[in-house]
Image (tube, rainbow, N blue to C red):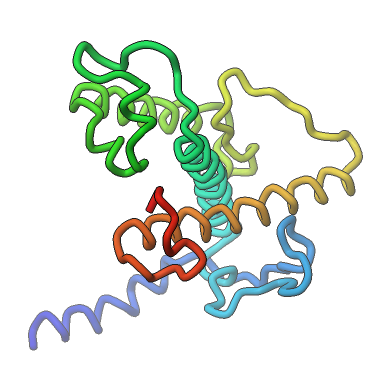
Length: 198
């Protein structure tokens, strides 16, 4: 009871320091395309300030890019393509390519997994600490080293390309989630039933 009373009492104090609510115009943002233009059923765009919305967009962009890489990697693995040589002294790339992708991940030595996790951590630290932060008006982070800018100079063309990237990333997030579901729950994704990689 004391905890509940304290939480209720402090919620008014916390609201006093919360940033003002804003009315985001989702129609003007890249990624707001038909058939669900401005789709925001939970009102997440109105939580917090412009910085909060920038953080949400950066998180969506990062997850989209990672999902596109993961989906592509899953297809490459499923097709049997692999690097020549050995991953470690006991594991060859060829043996990994013959396994299902999640089984191949389990076969990677722990030191190799640690190197992958460190590389991801390092990339995250570098992109978050680079220049003016995106929540303060800076550019959104990139995961390409060194950054390669192929963006058009025309603002309208840039918005079209950004929308395409976000929409492709959203589809890739759905794809990799369906791959994970199919690998862990047989029959959960009807289109993937009977596929040898699941």
